[in-house]
Image (tube, rainbow, N blue to C red; front, side, top):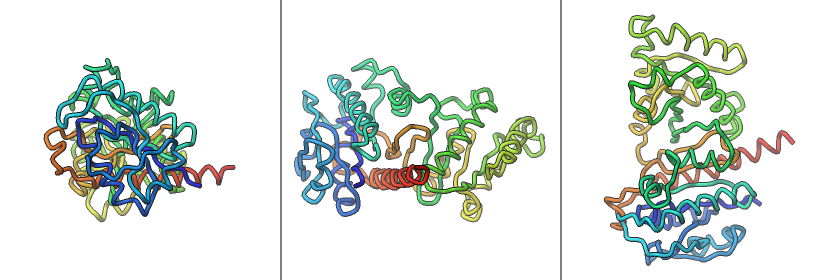
Length: 329
């Protein structure tokens, strides 16, 4: 029997709590998941079924949103983070990781957190969700993927200034990013021989050295070396011509050199259904590709599309990973 997914509550004052019941309504006949958080933070009209263990989630789905309760103490006010909640947000993430590590949940889906609230309220020492999950898993090498039905992208460098990218982008980093992505495409997406496209760093991929030397000096030689090692890889490609529909048909995932090079195309192609995925963890982790949205929290305006897509993708990835494990045993 496939275990349910676990959905963490995220920041109680954000849109996470109001999206969970909407996701249940859309997915109740498709897959099983349970929400981990304080049921008092959910909308008063939400159909809630309290459960005691993850194993009860599948049966509860027919009647309402399965909720494994975690007492946060003070009530939540939409749009206003409470420092007293910070330690509980962190504890929920830790508990959810325990569930996936112990095979009580098949995958982890995380609602957005508010990093400043966690820093102010609990001294949270990590740049974000992904780094904290990597710490809990004892995993150093983790990369971020953004995915929708039409495109998967992986930025080699993420939240750093554009001026810092040429220094941060090293052969070791790019090799690690490509290797982790290649492995994840096989294990988590069921693609035996993934086709990988790699963008250039400079405009027109350097245009033969006229617009930058990195492609000639080390990017192209590194890709040739990895190609000779058996990875189906093309590039470096001009980023401005690799994301139209005909180009996308030629690869399964695109490796980009910096944040906006990766995120602009996917958010343009499918803004509402993008999913954030952590590759390299020993468990499946997905997340909606949006923040806490304090400005609209509690107003009934939040769009559940990205969360629904994240739960669906988490379930699909968990199944692919399970099939990969069975084929190896």
